[in-house]
Length: 386
Image 1 (cartoon, rainbow, N blue to C red):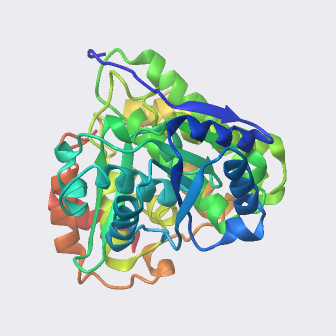
Image 2: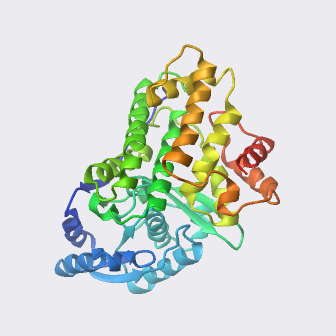
Image 3: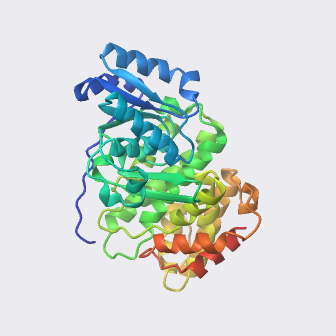
């Protein structure tokens, strides 16, 4: 385990009715930019409740609506312009990870003199941000408690992640009841996303990270247990609460500090989304078993076997056999239990025409991963996922 600094400054208000804490925003200024997506928060009443609380606290609200599932840089630019022209003091996101990601880069862009796309491709240019707050409505990305944001420029078929300490939210409201109305498809995709975050941190060659790996296994077991329950019982508070809290811990640094390596499946999926605008969690679910099979070897079999024994409860002394069974269990969970698309053709990708350029970009973004991948390796993974 190598040296690290663990710092999560986000205050979490977890549970029913915790949106009442939005009155705390008055401590940070008089005007907030409210970011949200397609308008579901208006249909389910969260929008009205948030405006009521903010109004009573004396906080004025500007709005940035229509944030996309893969948030676009054009939307970020609109938000930055609103912040600069209206004197916004803070940014509030109500929605899932895409909305929060957009809000983060808007908040950083408001403190930057150039084009906010600079902050996406050059994270080192992020030096300050407006205070960021969130009300979470989808358990998936963990953006409510981390420094990361992913933004797309579809005119260039580019989707990149950026990060900065100042983009960690100041406060986030996590009310599991707000996820009761999430569709089966998005519940499944969200579960795949949080599992992928955990996998990216769990599969590491860093020695001595025993505590991180055992915590990651606990998170994976939680997701595997409660994901199907949430599908069948969407208003099951226990299931929604455990998924929500597991998603936050999958990426807030708890399981990767001291053992992190570069991520590999996420860069591959970002290319899929950049070229085809597919649902992020579905892309991750499709690619994960293909990646596992591609990197399985005599060297990696013990790690996959440990995963099989500690997460899936598999028996057996032959590591390679247990490892193969663990990968099969993962595939079955995503595609049978959770009912997700089983291959790229199922999400509308039926040819290889973009695989090479996608693979070149993904390879550059995954240097130093669990198993080093060349562009040729990634092309083969895409092909196996067709």
